[in-house]
Image (tube, rainbow, N blue to C red; front, side):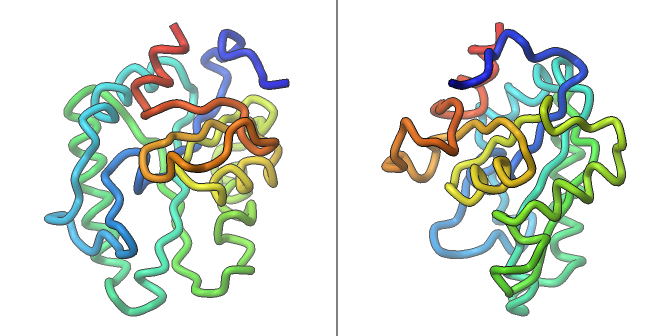
Length: 184
């Protein structure tokens, strides 16, 4: 049985995937620079509202493009700096971004393994995984959330064929804004 969305309060933590949640995901490719980054308009409307609802908001994103040499850590840093500036300009916030550039799918820090969740808990000790939600657009995001003991929300932005109901998914929404609308 899924948790009750009405139980969410400002003690909760929100974990967000990036590509396919905040911005449009490139099909079978990587966002390599800021010029390729395009926000979902719904995410820019949702993030200011989420900033009022959650104590901590972090992004956890796999970034294999670095490990493959297709982009650098500096390229990713530039993307993230510009993304945060834009989110802040509309009244939203991201408290921290965790990323994994490892190529090994078994790396503890690569989703679906929970390493980035543990990094977040180390940086923000008040995080309680029982009061945390992982929002993503892939099954690996849902497994990541479950592996860390979180609740999960699947966004059908890029993989609408993903089966639901599913034991790894508590709720399913079309995009970040439809999730926010369900909170009120």
